[in-house]
Image 1 (cartoon, rainbow, N blue to C red):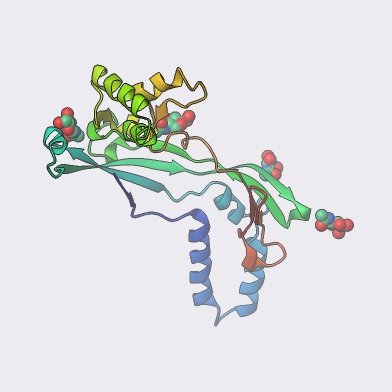
Image 2: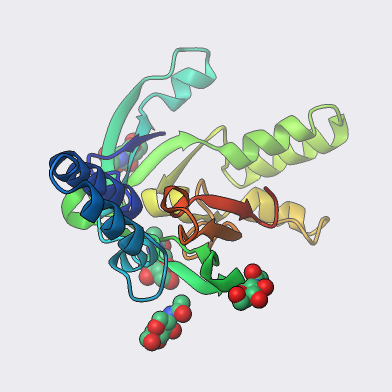
Length: 237
Ligand SMILES: *[C@@H]1O[C@H](CO)[C@@H](O)[C@H](O)[C@H]1NC(C)=O
Ligand SMILES: *[C@@H]1O[C@H](CO)[C@@H](O)[C@H](O)[C@H]1NC(C)=O
Ligand SMILES: *[C@@H]1O[C@H](CO)[C@@H](O)[C@H](O)[C@H]1NC(C)=O
Ligand SMILES: *[C@@H]1O[C@H](CO)[C@@H](O)[C@H](O)[C@H]1NC(C)=O
C-alpha cells in the first residue's frame, strides 16, 4: 500500500501565511507602516480574529488517497514465484482537523488544544466503494509467526490453527477493513491466552475521530512571528 499526498495538501494556517506573504509583497513598498500594524493586529490567535477562525477550523480541504496492491498469484508466490500485483486506487478520504478543547493561557500569549482528525470517505473521488476487496499480505499472521518462530510447539500450533481456519500468508479484506480495522481470527484465538491483546488490526486503526495529544501554541500576541508556533506537545518541548 502506498499513501499519495494529494493536490490540495495545505492547512489553513499555511494559506493564511501565504496570503500575508502575498499581501506583504504587494503592499510593502506602498504602505509599510500600515501593513505592519495590520499584521500585528490580525495575525494573532485570539477569539474573534479571522486567523483564529482559520486555525480553529481549517477551511482548505485536505485529502488522503490510498492505493493498494492486489496480489494476483498467491499460489505461485507460496511456491517461490515473484508476486504479481495490480495497483488499485485511489480510495479518497477527506480529513477534517478542527482544534478542540481550545483554552487560552498566560494572558492570551499561549493557547492549548487537541487536533482531532476525522476521515470521511469520498466516493466520487475514489475508484470504488470501501467494500472493494483487496488480496494482500496477512500482516497479523506474519507478525505472530515471526514472534513465535523460536518456539517450535507454539509455531506448530499456530500453523495448524491457520490451516484449519483457512488462513494463510495472504488475506482478502475490504479497503475499509484494511484501513480502519477488522477483527483478526488468529489474534482473536491468541486473545484466549493473552486477554489484554487487541484482536483488531488495521493500518489506521484508532486514528479516526481521535487526537495525538495536547499541543500548546504561541498565539503571536507577543511577537507575530511566533503565530501558531508549537511551544509544547504532550507537555514536552
Ligand atoms: C469565543 O467566543 C465565543 C463567543 O463569545 C464563545 O462562544 C467561544 O466559547 C469562545 N471560544 C474560546 C475558545 O474561548
Ligand atoms: C497576566 O497579566 C497580569 C496583569 O498584567 C499580570 O499581573 C500576570 O502576572 C500575568 N499572568 C501571566 C501568567 O503572565
Ligand atoms: C470516522 O468517524 C466519523 C465520526 O465518528 C464517522 O462518521 C466516519 O464514518 C468515520 N470514518 C471512517 C473512515 O470510518
Ligand atoms: C483483488 O483481487 C481479488 C482476488 O482475486 C478479487 O476478488 C478482487 O475483486 C480484486 N479487487 C479489485 C478491486 O479488483
